[in-house]
Image 1 (cartoon, rainbow, N blue to C red):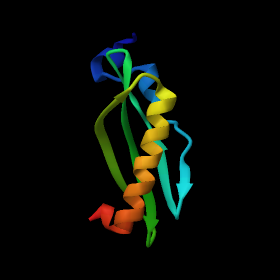
Image 2 (tube, rainbow, N blue to C red):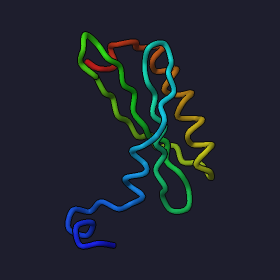
Image 3 (tube, rainbow, N blue to C red):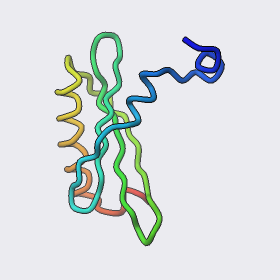
Length: 93
């Protein structure tokens, strides 16, 4: 790990996590960003939408943990879609 990585706490893996390809759903962008934790993956991510020229972001992390990153990301997508269906743009309030 380099000097600046140790100093600022950012690793190469963290940089890759930020470069997730979003899934578009009803005008929202869903970023699946599960978090590795003790050999499992915690459901996490963010939902974004451009509202009147301003990008609004809602970040979340859930208590659910699953055995694979793919499973965690798939469940995150389903939960995010359900949240959007229930709340719409109110998620940014």
